[in-house]
Length: 122
Length: 107
Image (tube, rainbow over all chains, first blue to last red; front, side, top):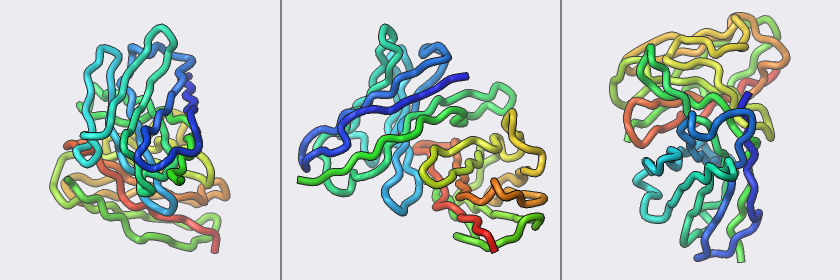
């Protein structure tokens, strides 16, 4: 079973870059697409985007200009960088594995990390 | 973007009750709809994908239905461990979007 664990600074200053890492175990990092999702306090989940080990990606247009995702196959890690952060970026950030249903031709998130709380404050 | 609207936003129910949660999409699509359960302080867990397919390991009391713009998650007999928040998600078109959540509380 795939296990995911997010890590990174819990506090980031406004205008700086948020950097998180998702460590993958129990499965091949090249077998899945990897999504990042965030949840601001008391808010709904927001999909940030996904990345594939080959470098292919798709980002939410609302964040696209500030987001970079990458996969390091040698370390079995997925990373997220979000630049020019503001208080509105304060949230729990989750990574999730994204599986494809061949029968229904659609994606779903089958494994999630526990989440990493990032607070943006000076 | 496709807006996903869940109703109700919260509900109170007793153990053994039948619970129904609705999810309405602002645009029509087929069955590209997933349901997740989230307990406080925990990551969401996949319950249902493709509107009605039960994820492996999920109890049979959970079921999903619907297509187009109207989707439903049903818990046939609520158990103590089911008190949580439930989210729907569409993966039909980018950006993928989630409903705002339905919190199921103990009556």
